[in-house]
Length: 61
Image 1: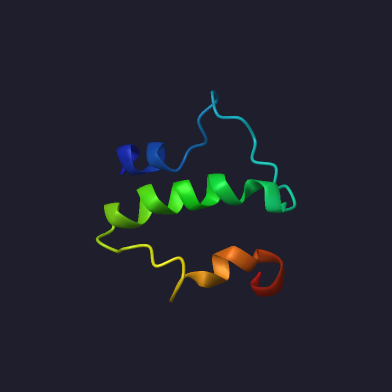
Image 2: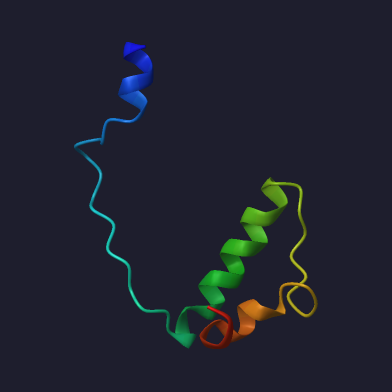
């Protein structure tokens, strides 16, 4: 039980998360992230198909 509690104790070295408003200039970083991240969970990025909403974040999120 003690080790489980350690998993959920904030790490003192972590910086606090501060959300920022999405800007179109972030798109290349987002696409790059998705190209790397999705295959790690056995999915493929289909940016011109089922994932095209990532090209218009302002409209969908």
